[in-house]
Amino acid sequence: MSALARQHLTELRRTLHAPETIAQARHPAVPAELSRLTTVLARYHDRLTTGFGVPHPDEHGVRDAARRSALLLSDAQLTLGAPSATEMPATELAGRLRSVSVALGCGLDLLASHFPTAPDQPTSDSAAVINATDTARSLMYDLAEYTATCAHLSQQAASPSAEAAGPLLQAAVISRVFGQHSRELASAIPFRTTPERIPPRPGEGFAELLNGIHASVQRLKNPQAPVCVATWRYLATAAAVTSDINHKLILSLARRLEELHEDTPGAIFNETAMAANRTRWKWRLVVKHWNRLPGYFGPPDSPISTDASDLIVRLGRLVYSDPDWRPSPRSTYLIRPLDELARTSAQATEVAAASLKAFDACNTIAHHRRAASRDAAVIIAIEKENLNHPRYPDVPKWHNRAIQLFNRYEVAESEGHNAANLLRNAIQSIEANQKTATPHPMAEQQTAAPLDAFPTSLAKHLATQQLHDTPSRQPPSGNISRPDRSGPSR
Image 1 (cartoon, rainbow, N blue to C red):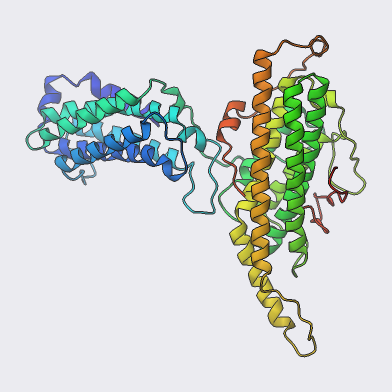
Image 2 (image 1 turned 180 degrees about the horizontal axis):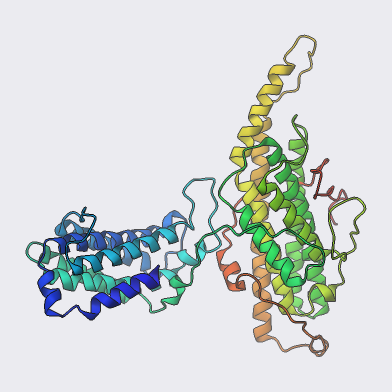
């Protein structure tokens, strides 16, 4: 949409000084369209000021500059009057201004779609990129041209609309001074879409596993929350099993980095593995709580449950030696040879990015803890009513179960945040080590196998993971196996 708006602005600026344009600027329809465009520009600056409603960096006065520009644009809009309510613009100039306004407004709505509209909705992977200071500078620099064009046209308009030129020029200058010419930052942000499911198939290669993990995680982050108690129970068990496999994956990466003589990243990965171990045990507590509640234990027939199973299958095939691995008691749980898991440090980075996505998926499940606890409370109330009978004097106390479940979800999400942040630092340490360290003679002997690119760039994963909110006695039947019952590593 930014490219379309830029195209309309270029066409408008090409005839900006033509006599016909100057004559049409005095038509009453033009100030009304200028008011519409000014309103859109003010909305942009308001969003930049508030960071789209989520915590954001406040550096170098960019947010304050956006606030000042937004106030000036609002003053100019009041001077220009109400936006046009006509369906068809009255003049060619008014039509061009309408096209710019619509394209810019759609672009802002697309950026805003990456941010939650309700407390229980997660942000998208691109949210932190949109909210970054560099992106705010890029947008302000870009918007300055639109504001300056509005100022020029308002100067040609009849009074009192011409008085809006002053505030518009001031807003354009502020945006240009605090902006930065890097238009690609905003135009490269993708649409927020939910990919189609990619069913696991036998013999998937390394790149196919990574693509499938990416698709499953994106589908799990769909804002639609599940509504079935069996689904909540299944997703909790799936998160516990995923955390268990993720722990093995990070341990394997830590040992592989030691073999590649990446000492600093290896130490950070060992610390991350300890955090991942704590996370999986917290998820086991969540599942244990669900298993104490009455209700249906079978696998629910819902798309989100299928996505959770797909994630487990592909993450397991990434870790275990069986290329067709599926969770079952008879499946092999031998770890894949480390040199196959990651032949080089660069491949270790790609695998770690997949692990980071798995943490994000588990935290997304925990983020819906309010709805899960509410549904559990309904089941608890029904069971309490059914058991409240003189023949059953020792009725369990159910009244605190929902609160306990909510708290356990919250703890699991907190531990998941911690593990994901440590993993992010570990990935960054690999990149830093590759830039500064001299390769070890033994590491130079490792030959890199061809590797397709990960679905999204690593820099995006490291910049956009705003991570939100244990395994069970009885896992869901079907694709998910019983979690490991061994005690925590000492």
